[in-house]
Length: 203
Image (tube, rainbow, N blue to C red; front, side, top):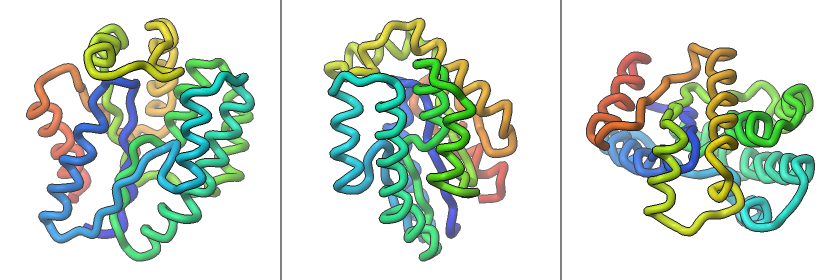
């Protein structure tokens, strides 16, 4: 298994971060060179921008521009070189999250997001997007039990319902790229769904 770009998406508390590590271990066991990274983040500059986005008050336009600036640096320094080497890249969130959070959650214009997407990443899209879908109320309960909330995690369930709608719209626009993972069940069952999504693509 070489040169795969797989993204993990979902609202905060859906469990994607748990399963990205599990999948990385399984793929490495099959002999793949795996790069695990995240957005916003993945480079020194992008991690600094992540801190601003998560913890500083700002308007939706500023937030969106910072997210795409972080993505540009991340693509140039980590994702594109890894793919050029033939590695498998597992990324905790990518552009679908921007359409879901800034577009769906914040109500930022989708046409502007589409323009920025084209400028920053050109035609590059993930080979597979695993969308960990979970009811916003259930996700909120998980977050409350796990950690202190950042700017996004402190939003109400109505915000996360809009984010979920944003993910649904992205999946509807690119159904062949998406695999919906029902993350409401036990971890082993969620893991089986992840494995099935890869097996369905012959990976």
